[in-house]
Structures are given as C-alpha cells and as structure tokens.
Image (cartoon, rainbow, N blue to C red; front, side, top):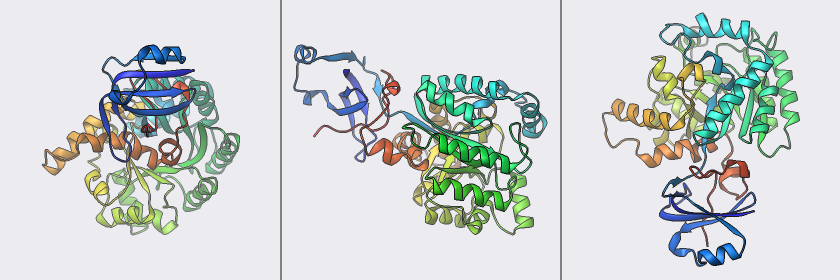
Length: 384
C-alpha cells in the first residue's frame, strides 16, 4: 500500500531540526520513503492517483515523530487517583493493593487500556517496568506499539515472584522470548538502589548488557533513599551505581531528582540517560530534577509519565508543558527550555535514552500500525 499525507506541518526532528510549514510524507508499506515541502512534490494529484498512491489530507495538522515514554508502569491503571493527597501513598496504598489485587490477568487488561491511551496521545514507544511482564509483552505485541517490557526485581519479591532471583529468571525468559522480535524486547528492571541488593543490581545489569537491552531503575528519587545510602554507603545513588559498575550507555535512570554536579558528571562520562517524570515528581512534591544542567553537560534526557497511579496521566504533551514550566520557574529564565528542546526530549532524545535511536532514526523502517493523521512515527527521511 502506498500512502502520501499532504497539507501538513512537518516537524522532522532530524539532525537539522527541519520544519516544513506545508509539507508531505510518502509511505510505502512499512517504509517512509521521503518527506519535504509541498513545492518539491513533482507529481500532480492525478498522477499520484494513477500511480496507485492513496492521498490523505493532513488538514493542516502537525505531523511529527511518534513520542517515546521512557518510564512507565502500565499495569497501574486500576490504582489511578488512589491516595492522591496521602503523604506516603506508595507504602500505605499502592504496594499493599498490588500485593492483594494485582494478577496476570489484571496486569494484561490494565496494560491494554494504558497502551490505547498512549497510542491515542501520539506515544508509539514505551519502556514499562512492572509485574507479570510476560503478559504485558504479549499485549504490546497485539496492540502494535514498540515496547520494552521490564520485569521488576525487588529483594522482597512482589505480587508475581517470591524474591528477586525468581524475578530475574522471569526476565531471562522474557528476553529470550522476544530476542528476534522487531518491536518488542524484554529486560531485567531492578526497582531501586535501596530495594535491591548489590548482587541483584549487578546480575540484572550483566543480563541486560549481555543482551543489549536497557538497564533501568529508579534512582535519586526518594529522600529516604538519599539518606539511607549516605548513612550506609557514604555516597549518592549515582555514586553507588557507579561503584557497582552498572552505569553505562545502556543505563536509563528514572527520576534523578536529587543530583549533585559530580553525579551529573558521572552520568555524562558513562553515557547514561535520564528518564524525567515531572508530572509524577511534582504530584509527590519530590523536587525539580536539574534537567537544564543535564542537557548542558550532554546527558541524554527523555520524558516519562511514570505510572498512571503516580502522575495520573499517560499524556506526554502534559509532561512537555510541565517540564518547560518547572525549568523556567526554577531557573528564573523565561527563555529556558524552548519548544525544540522539549519536543526533542519527547522524541529523539527519548529514543536515545532507551537505545532506540539507531533503530528509529537512522533507518526508514517502521510498523504501519504506528501511522496516524495526527502523529507520524520515528524517522522522517528527507527527500534527496
């Protein structure tokens, strides 16, 4: 099938950050052939139809790469809005409810709902970290999204495993199952620096890096995490991860609110990325991550929604607005965080954080189910 979308504002997010105020995109099967300004389109409408092209009018909408949600807990849909104003929502509500009510079937149904919400808002890639991830990966496959299913590891276990070793075995099986899949992959996802032993953190990192999948965890997020590591290890979470040798260009650290200048330098040196979840951070009153400093120092930063129980929404447009507003306010600089930087974080930088940039931005392959009139997906290859 050959499709051309015309009469659109094309935001390419390519290396030159080109924008075509009146542009087109040509797609054949699952491949984007070219994009450019409408004045470069040589064929007439009649000639295109005669050549078998299906013409879709973009109606002056914005056509842009699909967005990348770098940190999410898809299965939390049933807990959205639970204990919003509670000081310790995680321990009082969420963890007990997960232990009591979360099941393989609920995780699958919740993830299906969440993925539909993502796709409807223009998110075409997601990094998930939750339980029963084998079921979640199946739903990712069925719905057509590009997904990384991160099996959560905690020393104390979870609703789907008795301990971290059992979860690690589940992660190994998940990785092997989707090793050759074009859109879906699995990984071991330790919960946090203070909920996993050094041995589990190392085992998970070794498994993920050996299989070239992201190694992701919560880091430098909680006050008590900071205090515990300072008292027991004499360092910050980032310093601790670096001592363990689990920071690399495959590491995607979620939140990273409480960072020192030395932490930022370590992340830059190791090539690690940050998943910035401003909606969740603000709701929980955890603080404002130093995104401007991270970007200035060359650390890749993508946007994440966190779970729907944490930030209430899976809409990345909301995260873009919040990120810009908080960074402007925190720096007292109205010019900080311009739109091009925000959109880059939601698309290309997010792909870089998850190790998808090579796949999504330097080739022209994509899944046809990702194409909508409102949002194009992944790389837009400029017509030569």
